[in-house]
Length: 260
Image (cartoon, rainbow, N blue to C red; front, side):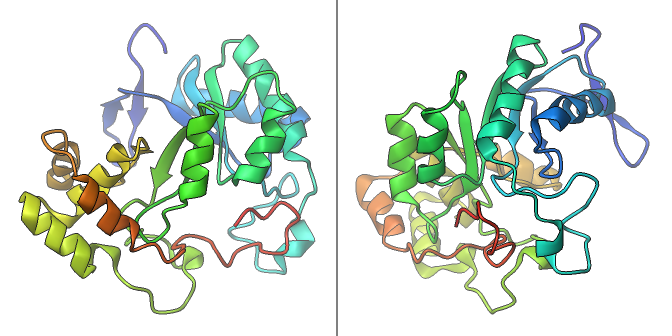
């Protein structure tokens, strides 16, 4: 990062110092290898940085350059692209050689897609970022990533209560943080349900990226380092698995690289 200390300009006009691991994602309309460097250059310019610590392929699913799959009003199949994610990865690898990304990784990949990537890469993916929580434990994927030294990172770890409507299934879904087992374990440890769900990931060897804009909740999210869950409580949370995906399970299901 720039020596002067990088900052981000918020919508309020205030500036905020950029601290910690700088992660950015390649938007799925820039998946052709000739567009990857363009996307990175624009991201670095927007961020005011010389490099990012981690750059991820947003999804194995991709769309035609110049479109926006999340605002397109027509049939999404009309804007599907068929770029092989292996080709996208070959466009990502030079970013490491050029010093624009310290590490590269993926998001929303399943184990079969990861296996294929591992067999056809120069730089192996450092990270796979996926939806993960007790209702969607994905133990096979957890085991695969551990075996292959790929750091698994959980998003929507609290059940995605604030997700956009476009990503929801449209059906009534159980609220993870109100699950009786989660609530009971939280009471046992004197913690909140959210803190139990975050600690669940750490005790599985998974990193986790909760999202909040409330200062008190952000502070509470950090307050999970003074305890660990017992094997029995981890097992109880594991029994909640119902393969429930809160984010995007019903989107783009006809794409050839749909991963769910």
